[in-house]
Length: 385
Image 1: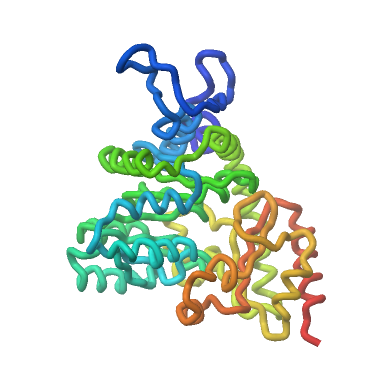
Image 2: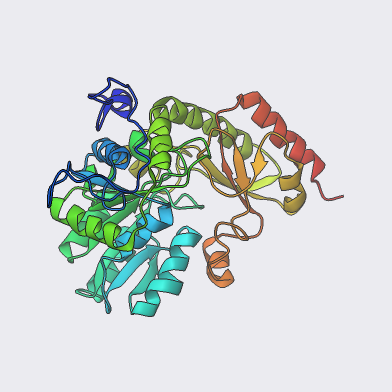
């Protein structure tokens, strides 16, 4: 089945008992037992719920894994993955990793003696060098591709092969691309995580996280962590997320189309000094991205010139909303240095390019002319007099 159909019919397709085309919302905390020690497959909704199970099977199918797990947020999913590691283990992480992921690694798991080292994941030689130097100690390589917010591209296949050779898990945050555009498990990754709040939900109405793996034993370990720590996604949110996933293909096609046109506008704009987008030909990682993904996504970051008051620019937009998050049908714009990446120390931000003038735009599915007109007006209104 092609992915456009799998998005709608994957996992558990409808309700066999009633014929309902949508999985019912099993809004229950517990389940009646048939007899002592016997149940109908469910006993308590933290351990398993039919609505959540349908979603988990669906995302497992979409990413090509043996199964998936749904959590109350993307950070809850990442926390479960990090819980696989033990004291003395070390991880490799990107140099412009999402701020929330950096925060939980640096401020929470470091307290349990789980260390990390920052690396430019777009340079495979640097990754290999550190794996060689720390052979046996590094147990996980966590990558985003593209990275958030500077759009660095990591070679999933090369990094996964390296990680496996040194006994480390290859973990890929696939939030920006989604399984519609990129399937990391097919390139050797062990674990895929999503902030499903973003493109998979797609309507800014649910907060959720996902884990998908290709190894049954690893899935069982992660389910044990999920059940033990309890950060599960509730039935109603599972229903909302499953509903959102059905339109992922048509939404991502429009996100891609609009983002490409806005990128062209920004590249030609005198008020912009730098544009970050995977679809810019000639950029480092462009060819690698084309080999492992079938689109460039809907997020573009750019640096405004000093002749633009970036704070006024953000407040001057009318169609594009200024706020956290990304991946919704509506366009959202944010200031990484003080919002999504505020948890990262300033010296690290400055070093990698997360400067105060950097802006991240999640391009929605609105009419492209309305979006371009909004940007043009904001640039005009925010010129430094």
